[in-house]
Length: 208
Image (tube, rainbow, N blue to C red; front, side):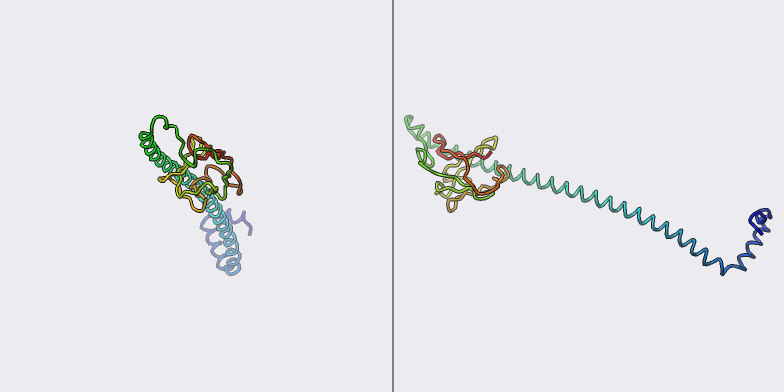
């Protein structure tokens, strides 16, 4: 009995023959059927797991990329905010200094209106300004407790002069300037390019 013979029979006849064959050979056929269906199921499960794994990995990679980008943006925003706050504090101190200077100038006689005040009325014979840290500078000239620091609009020149209402504090000839490393990269300790500014009564330091 072959397949052509089975399919030539009536449907009811085929059902009877198939039921009879199943009853007679059930124990022999069951292991084969189980193995065949198990292989099919295992293959489908494996394919589904691989698909899920790839999708999960892609989602994780996307999330990690977005998180890294957000972290970079947050760090940049924090740097900008800190730099802006430093500039705001500098402008406030400069405004107070200008008010005090205006008051002093009104009290001076006309022939003394151009008198220089600051470190001294003449250029120091010899001095150095050292960059000793990312946000630290040092000089033997820094002997006062407070100093006024002004930054040029292009952030290339910094002027430092003594002031009782200065916006920075000096300890042991060292001034800490928050945010300096954002403006001028620190590579190693060394002397900074500087010169005495008689009009400002302070020291000009080149940052870039």
